[in-house]
Image (cartoon, rainbow, N blue to C red; front, side):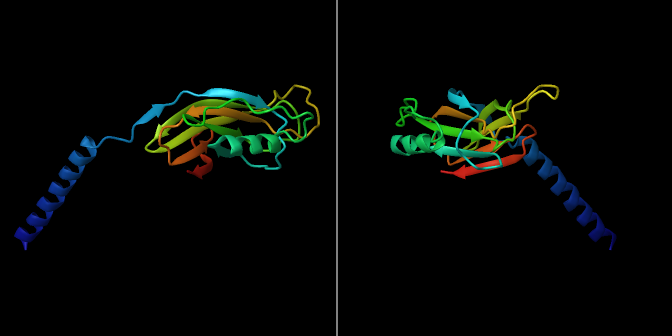
Amino acid sequence: MKIQKKIVFIIIVASIFLSSIIFINSKPQQEESITYTVLEKGNQASFRDTKPFISVLTDQNEFEGFYKTMHKSRMPIAGPPAVDFANYLVLLVSHGEKRTSGYSIEIRRIYTRGTALVVKAVLRSPPEDSFTAQVITHPYLLIQIKVNGFTRVELVGETGEALDYKNL
């Protein structure tokens, strides 16, 4: 009986030792920062979403239609910014509809995690003591990013909480 207990003890210790070696030698998923260009920012997009969301636009026709819908409350509707969709994609980042003016979106970081493109964006609120117009606004950012084999785009908040995602 004592021999069996010793064998079990040795197996457990060996398993723990091997697991720790594997854990120490395994590399965490590497994050790589991605550069981007802000194409447009504003607070009057014509959407009715109340929650944060991200949209991925990958071709000119899709972008033009989306842009017209996004700006349908403006007259005249200007054309969208020029984008080389052979090399770039466009992301629309929004934190949803707001009940006053003074909100904006700030990109904190854009990086890759495996084959996912992660956009860390926060909603900037108006200062507490500021006067704000009581008007429905919809702050947004349009950003351009180089195409790089992404299979998923994720929008995360300040603390890394998942807000929205799109599979490509």
